[in-house]
Amino acid sequence: MLEKKRNTDPLPSPTSGTLKSGGFPGPLPPWGLRDEETETEQSGVNSPRIPLVAKDRNCPLPVTEARSWHRSLALQGAESGTDSALCEGSPDLPESFSPTLLSLSLVRTGVTQLKAGSFLRLPSLHLLLFTSNSFSVIEDDAFAGLSHLQYLFIEDNEIGSISKNALRGLRSLTHLSLANNHLETLPRFLFRGLETLTHVDLRGNQFQCDCRVLWLLQWMSTVNASVGTGACASPSTLAHMQLRHLDPKTFKCRAIELSWFQTVGESALGVESFSYQGEPHVVLAQPFAGRCLILTWDYGLQRFRPEEELSAPSVVSCKPLELGQRLFVLAARLWGGSQLWARPGPGLRLAPTQTLAPRRLLRPNDAELLWLDGQPCFVVADASKAGSTTLLCRDGPGFYPRQSLHAWHRDTDAEALELDGRPHLLLASASQRPVLFHWFGGRFERRTDIPEAEDVYATRHFRAGGDVFLCLTRYIGDSMVLCLCIQTSGCLQGSCPTQATIPSSQGWT
Image: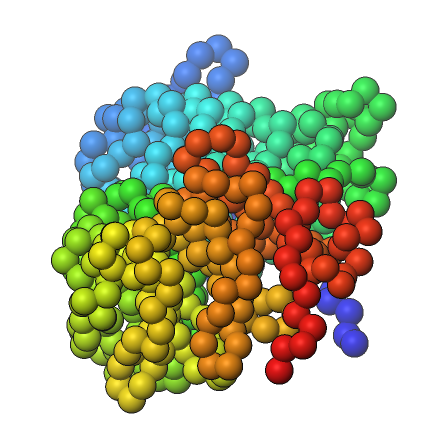
C-alpha cells in the first residue's frame, strides 16, 4: 500500500506574498510602502501606513482602478481594473464591490461577527484577508457562495469562537490561516469537506489541550497538508507545549461530541433517512406545514437542501422505500386518509398513486417498513376505536391489506425488530400493555406482552453486546429501558440489568 505523503512545506506569511497561479504568495511590499499609485494613511503613532483603494473609509464605491499594490495581490493573468481591493476602517462589511472582485482585504473594520452569507455578493473571490478586526464570532456558512476561494487569512483578530460549519462550501480552499486569535478550541469536523487544503496555520492561539483537542491531533496526523500549530494554555502539565508534540494515544476520552449541524424551518414529527440511486436523502413529516419534505445532500454546499415536497395535511409519518429505479413514500395522515406516492424513475416527480385501506385506517398514528418473506410491507398503527392496525404488502403495482392486527385497541406506535432470526412486531396502545407479535405461517401471531409497562405510547429498540433493548415511553409513570430476554438464552443468567422475559421459540417451524 502506498503511503500518503504529507506536505511539509514551510508556512509562509499571508501578508508577504503575491498570488501566483498554482502557488503560495511570494514577496510583497511591506506595509506603508509609498509609490506614485498608492495612497496611504497614518493611523496612529505606532500603526503602519495602510495602502487604500478607496478614499472613503466606508468603501461604498465599486473598485474601478486597481492600484499597483493590489494588482500584486491578484491572481496572475487576471484582468486589472476590478481584480482587488483593500478596505480599512469601515464600520460594516462593504456591499457595493463588483461581483467579479478577486481579492479583498479588510483591516480594522467595525464588524462584530461574520454572519451566514456575508459574502454572497462576491462569488468570484479567490483571496479574502482579515487583519486587526474586532469581530469575535464566525457563524455557520459565513463564507457561503465562495466556491472559488483559495486563500482565506483571518489573522490578528479577536476570534474566540468559530462555528462547526463556518467553512462549509469552500471546496477550492488551499490556504487557511487562523493565526494569532483567541481560539482555545476548534469544533469537531471544522475542516470537513475541505479536501484541497495544503496549508493551515493555527499558530498564536492558546489551546485548551483536553479531550476537545483530540480530534484535531488525529486530523493533523492524517491530513495531506502542512499545519502550523498553536501551543497549549492548559492543563498546567502541558502548558506552552506545541500541539504537534502531543501524542493522541495518551488521551483518555470516552465522550462522544454531538453538535448542531443544520436546521429546517418548520418543526417535524418524524424523520427518516434513505438512499435513492446511491445518493443520501432525508424525508421529514411536517404536520403543521402539511407535507412530507424530501431533502437531498448537496455536495457543493455540504448540507441537505429541499428536493421535493408532498402535500400531506395532518401527516404523522413519511416512510420511504426504494425498489430499483422506483421510489415509494407512504404518507400516514391522522385525518383524511393515508396515501402512497410513487416515482417511476430518476428525474421524475413523486405522484399520489393509491389511497391505503380507507375502511381500516381511520386514524393512523405511526407507520413502519419491514420485509416479510422477501417482500416489502408497511404496517400502519391505527389509534381509532373503529379502525385497526393493518399490514399492507406489495401486490402488483401497489400495497394492499394482508392482515388486520390488534382491532379495537387504539394502537399508537409500531416497532419492527428481529428475534431468533424471525421478524417480530411490537405494538403499543392506549388500552393495554405493549404486545409482541412474531411472523409465523405467513402472518403475525401474538407471542406475549411486556409486563409492568402500562400506558406506553411509543417504543424503539436497539442492540448492544448481543442483547436487544426496548425503550418505552409512557403517558403516566417513568419511561424505561428493558432488555428483551428469550427464556432459553443466557440473558436470564444476569447479563441484562432490567429484563422482560418472553417465551422461547422452540417448536416453531
